[in-house]
Amino acid sequence: MTTLSKTAVFQYQTVNYTLLLILLIGAVFALYSPLTPSCYYSDLGITCPSCGLTRDFKSILQGAKAPFINPASPYYFAAFSCLILSRVTAIIRLKYRRKTNGLIRFEGVVVGLIALCLLLARL
Image (spheres, rainbow, N blue to C red):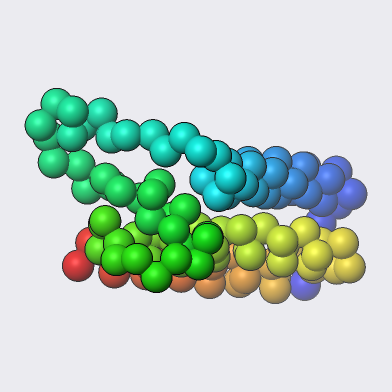
C-alpha cells in the first residue's frame, strides 16, 4: 500500500479546497443572486442543450416544486452534488489517512457516478 508524501497531500488538499470553494461560490450565487443569466444562444435562435440549467439549479436549491425548464437538470444537479460531496470526502480522508489505494478507488467511483449522471442527462 502506497502513502502520499506531505508535499503531495498539501498539493491535493490545495486543489480540493480551491475546487470546493469555486463550487460553493457558484451554488451560493445561484441560490441568492436576484440575477438569472439568460441564454445568449436563445437570443440568436439556436437551440441550447444546457438552456435553463441555472434557473433549474436555483429552483432545486430553493426546494421549489416547479417543473424543470430543462428535463436533464436533475441529472446535472446530481453530478454537481457528487462533485461537491467528493471534494469534502477527499479532504476528510486525506486529513486522517495518507493511503492512496482507497483514495484512488474513491476517485474512480466518483468519476463513474458523474459519468453516469451525465449519460442519463443525454438520454
